[in-house]
Image (cartoon, rainbow, N blue to C red; front, top):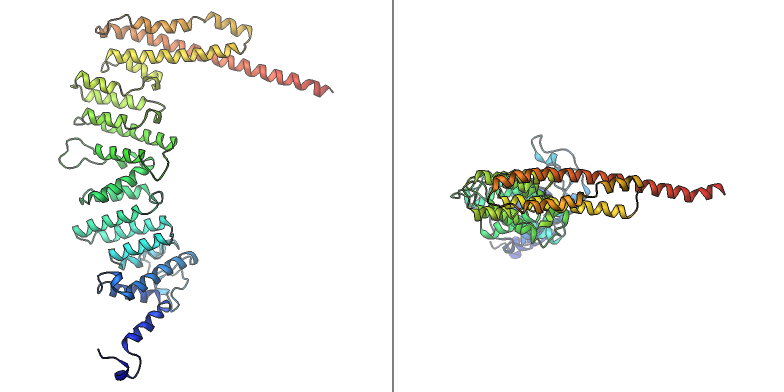
Length: 453
């Protein structure tokens, strides 16, 4: 443009530009946003524009500074120094009034292109910004831009948001937000890489999920109602999560969630036995203290899928750990015609083993001492152990092919086992009371000489 010193008699355009950039810290917030909005349409990237790069650095610096120092900020109240503390919103319709001081900048940065947002997030991560605030901004940006974008722009937007969330601390991202992105992503056919990242993040927080989150319809063309494969991938990601420890408490929460999920998917007539089994065995046995919910889901599944082969049924039977079934569930199993006679005997054996363990505990208490009356009572009931052991021996004499006859006997024996359990519990309670009473009396006797002295 020939604006050199010899023509203008003053500073040329290059010198004036350099001087202006040196004074960028004196620009107002609104001026920065205006320059960025104009420049991002002229330059393909930040690297190709020193002006844009300096403006973005100033934006990030001011967000860091004023997010901590200002309780409430408004764009209309920005002065020449950059930002002035104000609690007056630009208008009653502005969303800024609902933001905390840490998120006042959310709406203003909606002018940024997706590439600039990506640059801002990466810079914030390097400068140790609060990851929870960054994740909230990404969700806000995605929701604000989504409805006016084209299909390709939506796909690119969701993929970028996922990629940016992935570099944050996953625990700072709300599980609910991840499932919101998932439901959007499933309809956009996003890249496999982004989908894997999203599934890994969800899997790492699976113990925070709710049942409704997992009831995701199966992909188009699949016969079953819900996307079982997706949930199995969540479980795999949870068990192999390298960013947080899978504690026993977290494992049990996920197990309870899976029990509820299996109860929901069990009535699906198109659910294959292999998928149902995969859900049942995905977690280790230690994750469950009780198998009652698994038994309930299995009972429903067998009722709906009555045409399964004996081999398929036996594989499903093996899922149950009868030792972790309640007495009520074992009693129901022994009378359940959908289960084989072998399963009924297995449940009864488990019941007997529990009874034997209970009796063993009673005998241990007896060995530690007891009153003559309690000992006499135990002698009068001393044959309970022997009776309990005879139950399974008695059951084993029947031919398993004669299932109806066996079930009738099993029902009678089940009632006997439950009676014996009640007797043993009562004996344990009485002996425990006697032992506590003796300890208390002994303690009082030792303290008596001190009181007399």
